[in-house]
Image 1 (cartoon, helix red, strand yellow):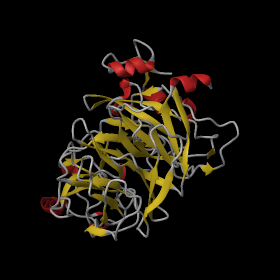
Image 2 (spheres, rainbow, N blue to C red):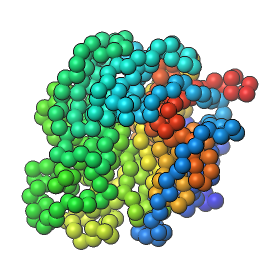
Image 3 (cartoon, rainbow, N blue to C red):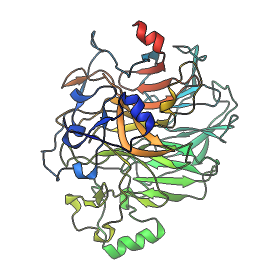
Image 4 (cartoon, rainbow, N blue to C red):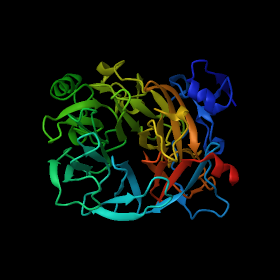
Length: 454
């Protein structure tokens, strides 16, 4: 295993690693596969670790979903317990209301569910359909920010709607009101749309994934025509069926004043505003078919009017060979993401751990860190992902590393029994993790006495 000491690692990370000199997997060892996963394993992937395109042959290796094996066990760092919290129909995105109620998108069923559980409870006391008849709902947000929101916003596949809401509502009191009637001119491809509000509640951010892997079918433009297009849109904006896609869009709370916040983000599945810095972050699925270890997926802070490369460049100034020479004017303009993730891991859910004080609250060393759900690879010969990781931060700034936190969903090289999607922090400090293919919400609590008793 290749390791190196990172002397600038945060004090919380050093403490969690249990050593004064945390050893971090780097180089090829950082890429690895599911066999090298274990709670406490820390990875640091850099641009220098990326191989050349087609260093390995592009592979399709979908995982077979199987029932949980009798000897399967989810693994966490010492002191934590994990157990099934609820069973739902293909649960995906998850958000916790200010009063502690848990809102979950059952995307395939077109529903938003609400789960209510007292602090410390290991199962909901009540489960209710908040709204149904929606079009592949995914993102959920509450407005205005603070303890008394008046609306629940929901992102459909190609629109944003909202429901009047009073704290404690288990069912929507009326029909949805359309806020944004159409997000993009095309549908298909990536269908998840996530939403979050700026800290002051004045801007609604909406992530819209691309319609394809590499803008296939997008008509060509000359560099001059592309630049003209960008004057009315933003640097690196795609066009044709990809117009208004691979972007993070911004609106006022009424759905007006649309702008492009950032471009070239192939599929920002979750957009979250960091409560420490008030800066948006994205968990991003990068492109396919360049080989096992290219390019890395990523989680990053998103800069206003920032360009992240898709489709012409990846991970900074790396031109995609399939579009070579198409946009020489964009060379050197793509932002390098903050945290590179094992290629094809498929990061989906993202949440920040607050200063929690409930009965399941995590140790202070996790405060401000970002938890990310990796849905798992289908296009890598050595399976990766299928776990929850934690990104270490200092004052809201990521240090480039991430640590395995919840592992064990892979049964063997060919099959898995769960796929994490959404992550959220419950009112009592527990981490809730949706598993869509398993149909389960998992609850991870810090309970050192209970963990030691097992």
